Amino acid sequence: MTLDPRLRDEILATVPSLRAFAMSLASNADRADDLVQDTLVRAVANIHRFEVGTNLNAWLFTILRNLFHSEYRKRRREVEDADGSYAARLSVPPEQGARLDFEDFRKALAGIPLDQREALLLVGAEGLSYEEAAQVCGVAVGTIKSRVNRARSRLAQMLSVEQGEEFEPDSATKAALQGALGS
Image (cartoon, rainbow, N blue to C red; front, side, top):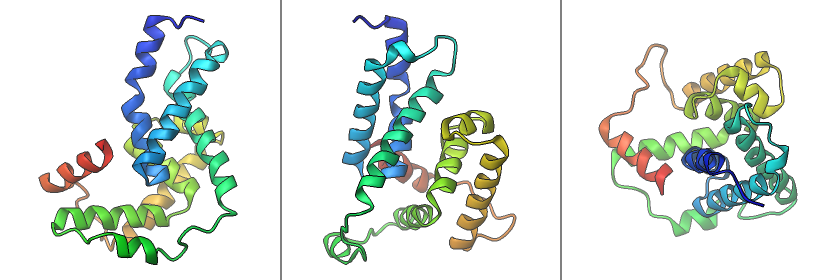
């Protein structure tokens, strides 16, 4: 089967966004890369199911999300360093303030419920509309809005951010974010 070059280019253009979403779900660069690769393989294998003229990004994000949840269900029965003590011994705390802030953010993000986290990432990080995010997650638009609001409130509480404080990262934090999400 030959893939239309325009459709192939559209799919490839989504890879950075897919990877960022996978990274935020999996919190592991290798696993995120595997998720993106599995998503692309599954998308190409099932390209006949894609309806031309519909939202390709939403279709690909849905495939990635479903792959992640399938694996998550399988892994939840496994116990892997539940308290993080082994991983803590292997890592060296970062020395830069921006890196520490980013790690605090990642930990806080990982601490919010998965449904809220994915809604926040789809709307806030990936720039999907509430309607598109609702389509990806298979829920009502109001549910997505509620999840995003709860996620934002919970993050603000966990990071001790006061009402009205600026959320815009400084240049060092932006560089750390780009390096972490782009690696």
